[in-house]
Length: 442
Ligand code: 5BU
Image 1 (tube, protein in one colour):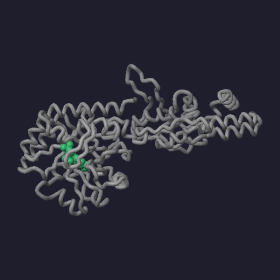
Image 2 (tube, helix red, strand yellow; image 1 turned 180 degrees about the vertical axis):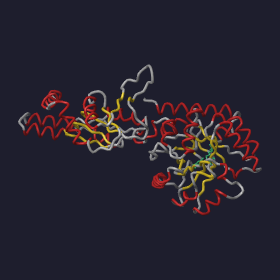
Image 3 (tube, rainbow, N blue to C red; image 1 turned 135 degrees about the vertical axis):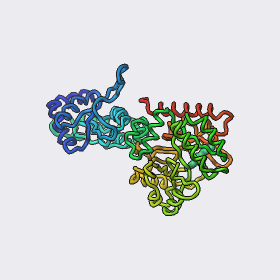
């Protein structure tokens, strides 16, 4: 019965041309979007007509990836960061729309609105909404039934039947974290294009070329031990994290050697200083003192606790060399006092400082939506565990696939191993495999 009714409605309209004119006036003519994309396949004619009429370039999503050539899923000329309006004919659950959006987002395109000719009101609008977009429909099924009833095209019994069917047959709820966290499905290369801080860009490019998202926390207290560890492990990591103040025989030559290894193996250095004072004091701690952190650390960790002023203590470059900041949004230790509101406020704080902030140290990055920010997650070992001081460990699978880590920090898992180099390879491969799985189309 319902199928017949749909066919009837379609035939009563005077074709794609009229529909596209209505859609154009309804939602396209005032849109500031860079591209249009029709959901394959039935919306393609309408999207094509809208693209011609509005002169907004159209993108095409392939449902089946080519087995030859570029294997691209999205065809067209676009750049990461551009916006795209989705065009659909009928929405029931919204699942086809969400599949298309997933592929577009993996290319770094920004999707806010979906326009549809007919919303069948069976849950599609809610699914699109809860995955971070808005559905605008030219008609809802309720409006259509009322029009047909008023015009005497259907009987009251038929209208009641359809209304009953729609209210009792609801589509399943779809919630896909990769759709609200834009960065999750994007490759590190693509995200490097969006990064505003040069260090973030460099880090993402190092990760992509060295094929590693492993950060080694070199928590040893002797300079020779740290340098010999890095000589063995350097080629497997994208970043080395230091606690400069735990070293017992610190000397300036150590910094020269450390920088030499960073150049030799192409990794960046993060000093996990966790600055947490008023801006003026932090500025002195960063630039002065015996460690002169600003001179050698590509990035530092900073608490958001003192408020925005702390970020003013840093600049995006020192003597012409780029610098970055990781804001501490969460901690890995059991019972820490950071609340969900604090985490969210920390992430919001970074918006104005995207030329300085490289990313966030946190456990669960669901609030980090901007693909230009990196999620750095400590507390990683091959099995779930805890140490004697409340440190909580999660596995590579949990941190990368479930919690959204871009870079995982491993300290004792590697440093305390009998053979740190072979252990680093095990972590590197496990973490990279999770990342590849995460960005794949499954
Ligand atoms: P581990 O040996 O893998 O437990 O070392 C973890 C490192 O990460 C260590 O240097 C900590 O200071 C650092 N860390 C952490 O473990 N948890 C946090 O929330 C933050 C930093 Br922030």
